[in-house]
Length: 186
Length: 418
Image (cartoon, rainbow over the protein chains, first blue to last red):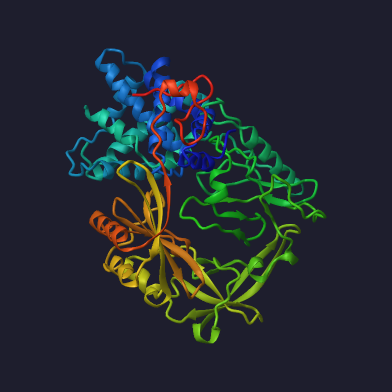
C-alpha cells in the first residue's frame, strides 16, 4: 500500500533518506514495468529505475509534484527511452519498442505544419487524448506511454487481440488527423 | 532523431493526469443491482473491493468492480472512499486506509478533492469543499441505513457526517442552482457585515434542497438572492435563508473571468483586496534551498503586477504550475484569504473564489518581480534546506542518518550514480 504520496514528497523536501526507501517500496514495481517494457532487458531496466530515484532526489525540491506516480513515471520513461536509443546505436535494441516506433509512424502528419514548439505539441497531444473516451484514452496511454504489449492490454482491458489492435489503429489515425488539423509539425 | 522517435519522446510529457489515470485498472463490467435496503452494505463491499485492488503493475488482470452503488463523474474513479457503516449507519469519508487503484493511499482525496455525497433518489447535494484547483471527484452512494447511536469517529474515519439537527442552516443547504449555475458557499459561517452597507438590490428567490443522509429525507428552503454592492453577480451574491436575517456570501463555483480586467472588476479588487506577505522558494548559488517569507507587498507593486487588464484567462484544469512566488492576498469583504502566484515560466495564477485563473504575464515580469522582492522587501523568515549531495554506492552501504548524510535505500536496490 505504501506511504501517502504527500508524505513522501515532504520527506524529499526534508532531505530525509526515507523518501527514497518509501519511493522504492511503493513504486519500484511500477517503474520497473515502465522501463522493462521499453528496454526488454532486466539489468538495463533496473538501472533506469535506480537512476529515477536519483533524479527524483535531485528534482525535489524545488519541484513539489502533485502526482508523484506520474512524476516518477515520466523520469523513468525518459531514462529508458534514452537508454533504448543508446542501445539501438549499439545494436542492442529491437523488440516491443521498435514495434511501437513503427506504430508511432502512423501518427505522423502528412502535411508540413507550422507549429514546432515542443510544449505546444505536447499540449496538443494531451488535448487530443482528453477528447477520447476514457477507455480509448487509457488504452492509448497504456500502449504508447507505458509501452504495454498487446497481450498485456488484452489481459487488462478484455476483448480480443484484433479488437485491441483495431482500436489502437483507429486512435492513431485520429491523432494523425488531429495533428494535421492543428497544423503541427513533428 | 527520426520523426516517430520525436513524437514518442514528446508524448512522454503529456498531462500527468492522463498518465495517472491510465495506471489505474479500467472499469470492466458494471453490474446493476438496485436494492436500496442493502445499499449501505453494497457500498461497504465496494470499499472492500477497492482495498483489495492492487495497482495494475502488481495485478493483472484487474478485478471487476461492482459500481452499482458507487458511481463516479470523473475519470479519477474506481475508489470506494465513501463507506457506510452497516453496524452504526454512520456515513463517512474514509481515506486513511483506502488504496485507490493506482496504489496511492488517499492522496488526492485528503487535500484536493471536492467530495460530494449525493443520494441517487433526489436531487439535493451535501457538499464538503476543500480549496482546490484540481480534480473533482464525486461519489454517489445511497445510504439508507438506520440512524446511528454512536456519533464518534473511528481511526479510519476522517469526516463524521453530522446528523441533520446538528447542522447549521448553511450546512443543511450549502448550494443552490440559479440561472443554471451552481452556487456554493465557500465561506459558510462568515456573515456579510454590515449588511445594510454591503447588500444591494434584491434579485430573486430560489429553492435550495438539502438531504438528511441518515433518513434519506429531502428538505427544501427558500433562498433570497441579493446583489453585493460593487461585486458582479457573475462572481458572487448575497443570500438569506427563509426568515433568517443573516446574509451570507455565495460564490459562483464555476466563476471564470475572461480577462484579468474582468477579475479585477467583478470582485472590485481595487477596493476589496489587500496584499500580505510574499513567499519565495528558490535555490542559492550553493544549491541550498530557501523558503523565504518577505514583508508585506506594497499596494502599488501589487497593482503594477496586475496592470495589463487585457490579459486573457488561459486557465485549464490540466495546467500544472510550479509556483515559486506566492503573494498572500486578502479579500476583506468576504473575510477570506487567497494567493496570487507567479511561476517561473511567466504565469500569474490565483485561486480566488476557489476556481482556477491564469494569465500569462511573461518571464520578464517574473524576473523583474523576483528582483524587486529580493532587493526591496525585508526577510521575515528564511527556512534553509541545505543541499545534500546525491548518494553514492559507498554511502548507501554505510549511512542511514537523516539530512546531513546522503540517503540510502533499503532492500535490494542501490542508488547508482551516473
